[in-house]
Every structure is written in structure tokens, then in C-alpha cells.
Amino acid sequence: MSLVNVFATSRRVVVLTDTSLYDATGRILGFEQKTFGISSWTGALTFRGNAWGICAGLELAERYGSFDEFMARSPSAFERDHKAALAGGLLSGQTLIEIHVAGWSEREDRARAFVLRSPGALGDEAPPYTWVEIEGAWHDDFDLMALSRLHRQGAEPEVDWTPETFEAITHGIPLAEEQRRKGAAAWTEFAGRHVIGGELWLTVVDRDGARLGVIYEWPDVAGEPIQPAPFDESLWPEAVPLGLPWSYAMFLDALKSGALDNETFEMNDEKMAALQRAYAPAVNMTRKQRRTAQTQARKVHAHAR
Image 1: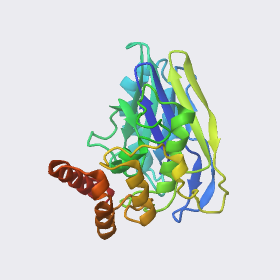
Image 2 (image 1 turned 180 degrees about the horizontal axis):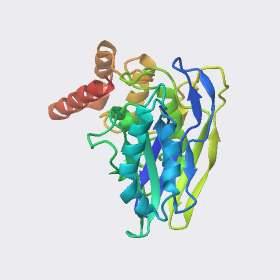
Image 3 (image 1 turned 45 degrees about the vertical axis):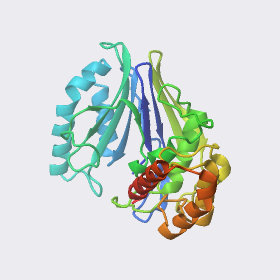
Image 4 (image 1 turned 30 degrees about the horizontal axis):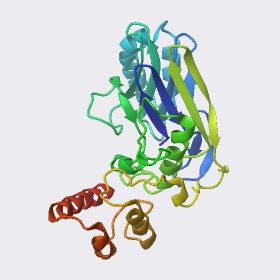
């Protein structure tokens, strides 16, 4: 798996990707650029899964003279070529492909972003080998239920960033750091392992063109597993992650006491009950507010699983 974060608006598409390559144990094999600009039209491609996908995608992209033509004609070519590669035994190991494209549509006079997947790839229920448009923020968190807490990374207290206001340095680096620290989701082959590392690449596609470059580097070493920095509460803005009906002080106490696991955000029922009793006098909620808080807490607990 690879880090892919997409923030799409009509004005621009911002993409964040990492560079780590690793084996089944999570040990780093090396580092490679995973996002590439297109010379024949304004856009860029990135990928997850077998590297065959990006090689085929770049070759296809350069056949067409515009982003719009690529979007219209490439799905059938991806399907034909991927099936032929599978039948010919040209792909080994992970044979799934997932291609992300960001480009400037001359026809629509706007920026657009899409994702295409082969059969069996994790994602939405769209038919395989079909471009699905990305609108707004598409986070590669490996656990989408945790987006409520990731959304505030790098934001000012009580202010959430949006795809329109997203800034790669201010918001993107803290977001990627948190995703790196969390690890892969339980349903993946890399469950529990840390798989984001190397360099953090920024790609911006707008009317003026496609620009790519490194904005951050992690201290990872080939031959070793990825080792994220420990949780640091100073990196959090003084605001409660979305979805938690608590004060910021209670949120920090929940982390420090172990009532809320700082890696998975899973709740410890016994410790959480004790913490809620301790804060009850200060909170001074009405019965209706308490019921609402309990409902929200159960939802977050369910999401963490």
C-alpha cells in the first residue's frame, strides 16, 4: 500500500504521496517516486498495487493529446492490457492495480481527479476499469473511520481545513505524519504495520500546469522497518477531534489514562467510565446532553473497531 491523499476542487487538485517500498514484513526495500507528470497534457498519475499499473498508465497517457481524450479512451485499454498481462504471467505477487489521475479538463475548463481500479481492489462499488471522479477530499488513511481525528491535523483551534483551503505544508505534513503513525488497517495484508515513509511528494495540477516536488523527508533507512515518531500531543491543535463530544482537556486525559488508545482510538470501557464520572461535575450536562454524548461515544467506539 502507498500513501495517496487527493484534494480536488474545480480550481486545482492537490495530491500527496510517499516513496517507500517494502516487503511483506514491513521492512523497507528502497524508495521510489510514485507520482509522475504527463508531457502531452496537463496532468499527473500516481498508483497503488503492482507497479505494472503506473507503467501502463504512463504509456497510455502519452498516446493522447488531452486529459479529456485520455479519460474517455483509456478505460478499455487498461482492461485489455491488464487482462493480457495477467494471462501472460507478466505480473507477480500483488497483481491488483489502482490508478489515480489529476488533470486540467479543457472541455470543462476546470481541474478534475479520478481513480480507476482493477477487479478485487479495495474501494467503492464502482465497476472495475472505470474512472470514478474524486470530489473534495480523498484520504488514504487505511481506516476511513478515523478521518474525524485526522481532519484537524494542522488546522487552527476550532477551524477545519477544506479542499479549498488545504495547504500542503501546514495541513498536509501533519496529516501524513498521523497516517504514517497509525499503520495499515486490519483487513489488509499489511495489517498493523507502518507502511508510509521515505519522502512526501506534493503534486499540484491547475490551469497553469502540473508541478511536482518533495516537501518533507522521514528518517527511514533501507533494510529497516518504518518507525514513526511517538505520539506528541503538542502537534495537535487545542481542539477536540470531530465526533468527540468532550472538552480538549478531557480528550488529552483520555489519551494519557489509556481510556482512549492513541494509536487506534479504541476506547477502554472501564477507564472511559471512570473518566466520564470524574468530568461529570465539571461538564454539568443535561440528561439529554448526556444521552447525546453517550451515543456519540458509542459511535466513536464502533468506528475504532
